[in-house]
Image (cartoon, rainbow, N blue to C red; front, side):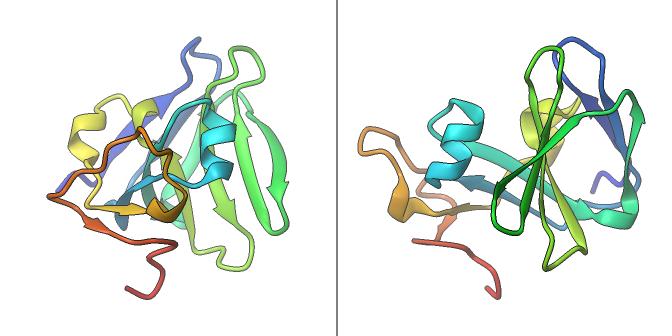
Length: 135
């Protein structure tokens, strides 16, 4: 299991480092993630907050919904992170922004109840109509 990794935005202005193992990997189909990314779904690699740090540049941060904070590069627009204030223990990183995204494959799909009708799911993954919290 990979326990140290780096990643960043497309233009290189913002870089981050994780120094612990991935807590969980998901593929999210919710409308909020789709709008934030402009994609039919978003891969997330979740890490302990204590194991995550921005090491170059500062992302733009915004509250995408009550209690939720997302970050992105202010130069190129790459979506980078998702944090839920109530939890505070983890930070989700957009898997595609990791330098080696293949090392952080998702194991479950979430919010498939909001999936676009033409988007496909992976039958090899566990699927949840909404969040998989507590599962």
